[in-house]
Length: 114
Image 1 (cartoon, rainbow, N blue to C red):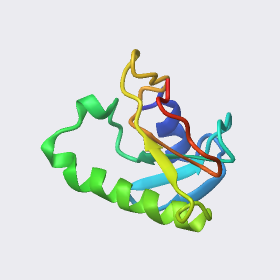
Image 2 (image 1 turned 60 degrees about the vertical axis):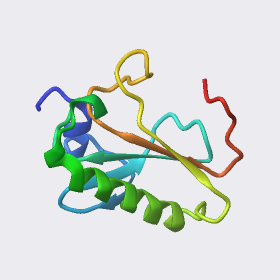
Image 3 (image 1 turned 180 degrees about the horizontal axis):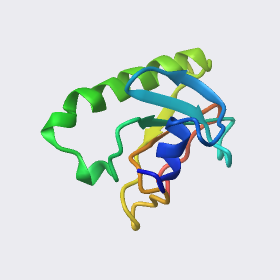
Image 4 (image 1 turned 120 degrees about the vertical axis):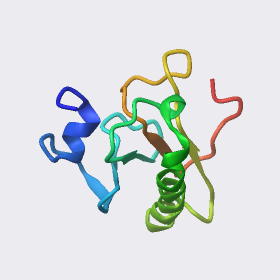
C-alpha cells in the first residue's frame, strides 16, 4: 500500500535502523522508544491489524514470534526478559494501520501496562 508508513519502510522508501530482514519480515528500531530496547517487528505483507488476520496468516504470525525471540537474544535481552506486544485498533493503542509487534526490553516491565 502506497500510503502505509510501514509498507514504505519495508520497501525502503523511508529509512530505518533495520535489525533483521528476510523475505517476509522486517524488524527495525522504533523512532520513539519507550524502553532501552524498542524494536518493531512487521510482516512485509500489508495486514491492517491482528484483527484482520486469517488462517492463511498462521505461518507468518508464527515466524514473527520465533524471529522476535531471536532478535531479543541478538539484542541481549532474552535472559533478563522482554515483552512482545501487538496493539490492535484504536482502543488497543494501535497508531499505524499495519500489523506490528513491539519488542520491548532492557528494563523491568510494569503490570498492568496501561
